[in-house]
Picture 1 (tube, rainbow, N blue to C red):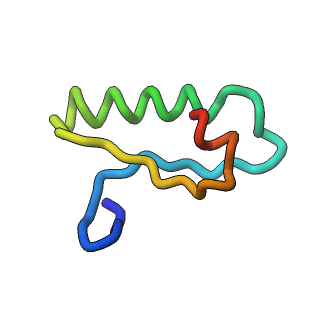
Picture 2 (picture 1 turned 90 degrees about the horizontal axis):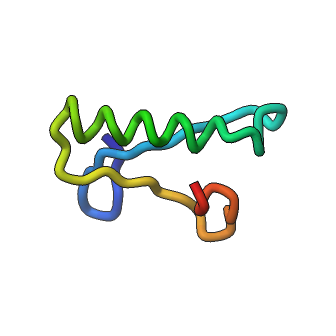
Picture 3 (picture 1 turned 135 degrees about the vertical axis):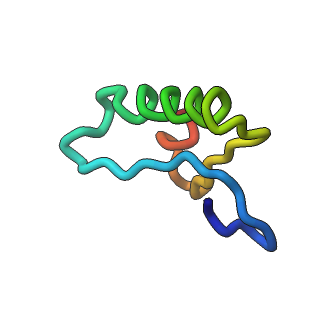
Length: 60
């Protein structure tokens, strides 16, 4: 759970070392986390909070 504005949201996030950027790991991990959140946790909503300047993360 991640604080967001005046609420708390279930968030998918990742932090990879630069050596692992642009290899598809973030997309693969996000898909698996999203599937887990909806199928196992029965989440109604899943969010990702990304800085608007982080273009690569926005595409994930």
